[in-house]
Structure formats: structure tokens, C-alpha cells
Length: 302
Image (cartoon, rainbow, N blue to C red; front, side, top):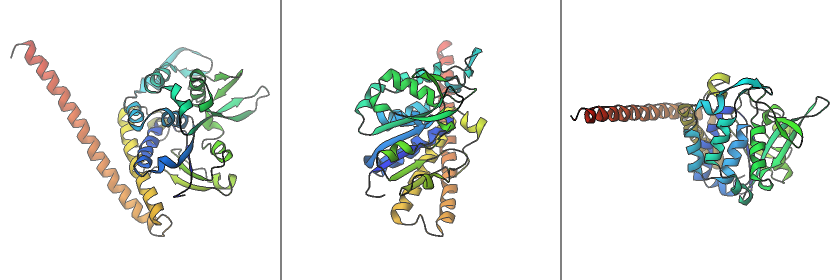
């Protein structure tokens, strides 16, 4: 894998997807990003794939650090078309941070998948190469790929309703495999790993990057679209990816003692992340209080 062309696979996972952007930072620092020829994502992984296709890391980080719960979880009354939440916030977020016209010129092939509902009641997985789509079409595909049932209504594509890509294929290796890629970096933030992936795609080498700590489940993970949660997960993704890739490159990854050493390092990293975030929060609160005090002093000419 160290010298081969790579595919990058991004799972779905809602708010936990910020972890993938932190891992992307590690790939850039280690130079692995230059060998990635294709990126494929499901649900929030599709959004991150689009970010990788049309922005730089700083812009991707900015998007995740600026998110608010209401951008994803704003109740849409009256409930219509099978969805509880409005997708207006997500549309505005994409409009502010992603120049979808740039995907066609990306040096990488970018894929997103959806789950399409067929007339007879069955569902099929669909895979779209975003580089060949118009910006408006890309937006609709991204909305469809993240349209979790009940939370969001389906999106009509080619006359058929499409929903969250993770329902049928939360690790969309297929389009990258069909490209001929046989070395994959998988950044998986789902609660349970898909152990069948290697058997489904024989002859393929997979390097899995997964959270070293619990990053939440439904309410405190998938539906956690807070800036604080994103900051923590991005930093964790960065450190986990560095640890895994460096261990792979040095040959330590398959050493019998690697798991024990990695667990110790992961705990140290976690404590450092907590201290850093607490320090940043304290600085932010202090700055706000000083601004309030300054405004009060000016008001009374003090």
C-alpha cells in the first residue's frame, strides 16, 4: 500500500463524520493524499468526499467547526413527505462552504451512494460519480445520500425516491473497486465494523482507521452536530490516523504488542485533547466576558 494508488472510503455516521476530516489532515501530512485517486462516501461520508473533491483542508475544517445543531435538526412543521427536519440548513451550509463547480476539475474521482426505492418495494444501492454531474445535480445527490429515513424526506433522482446511502452500503467500496483500485484506506465511524468487506472485494488490501474511543451513538454522536463535538472528533481522527498509518509504514501494525501500545498512546492522546479543548473554551469564555466588561465601561464612560 505504501507505493500504490489508493482509494479512500468514508462511512456514514452523521455528526461523527468530523472524525474523517481530522483523519484527512493526517493523510495530507504524511503525503498519502497525493496517491489517492478515488474517494467514495455514504451519507455524511459523501459530504466529506465532496469536501475533499472541491476544497482544501482548511475549508473542510472551517465547515465542521462552524456547524450548529439547527443546521441539521431544525424541526420542519408541518411534517410532510416523510421527514421531521428541514434540510434548509444543510443546503445553506453546502452553499457557503462548497464550490460544487470545482468537483468536475478534481484530480480525484469522487463518488456518493444512495438507497433508491423501486416501485415494487425493493431497494437498490446507486453509486454516482460526482465529477460528471452538474452542481445542482451534485447537491441533490448529497441531500439524498444523507436523507436518513424519518429524519429527512427522500430526494427524487431520475423520477425515483432516494434515501440515505448507508442503509444498504455504509462503506461504498464498489465504485473504487470498479475503478481497478485494490488498496483502500477506510475511515469508518459506524458503531459496528463491517467485517465482510474483505470477503466481498477479494484481492484488496484494506487499512482501517476507526475511533480509538467512543465518539457517541445516536443522540450523542450521529445527531451531535455541535462545534464542540466536531472539534473533539476531528482532533481524535487526526491522532488515530497518524498512529495507524505510522504503525503500518513501520511494520508495527501487525505486531502482537501493537494493540497494547496503541491503547496506551490513545489514552494519552485523549487526555491531551481534553486539556486543549478545555483551554480553548476557557479562553473563549474569558474573551467574551472581557468584551462585555469593556462594553459596560464604555457605556458609563469609565
